[in-house]
Image (cartoon, rainbow, N blue to C red; front, side):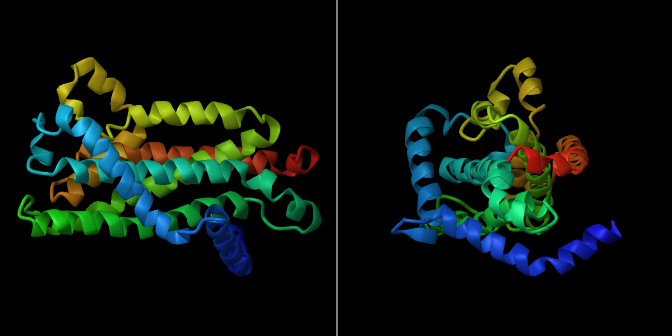
Length: 270
């Protein structure tokens, strides 16, 4: 652990440069640039609200989300899922994309997937401006009365779980992708399944008990659900919080172990 912390301190400048590089590459040849971070979730929220709002927007029975405008409900889920999707994809390709540097200079290889996740987390934090802006719009319009209380401060806990989960999954994927290139295509399909099981634009309480139990096995659903609850001024779902926290930590441990065991072989396959 001391060596791990020492490496972060030693290579902090490189880490910062890699984070900047990942952010710049994401918006390369884009006229909107970083502004797209604000525009894209807003447009997605509008489309999903229009398509699913008439079907699901008024049929809610969960008291935790009572009175919450459907666009805000959609936007919270979409923002968290987008971070998970983009960060794991970036981390998955990080070793292959930096193969030239890895061949020439020694750097702790976990810096690459970590910088990818960190860059996307910075973009995610910027995109939260949209969430606060939309929330303020509904408050000023009189259609939503935000229950401001201390529970909202605890929203940082599911966000921390989300970061740890994304980093753990990213470490696993970056390791597998070096040896099995098809992982990239399989993960895109898996992300679609995860999205539909994360209750981004529907309410789980409207489903059967067996379907609810199945969806709650998805740790991303638990993270999104607890973020929504705290952001809307409600207490945590303690069972989901415990499950997602343990799942995130175990995933990170497995990811770090797998990466550490295989990193010396990367040079032979990139």
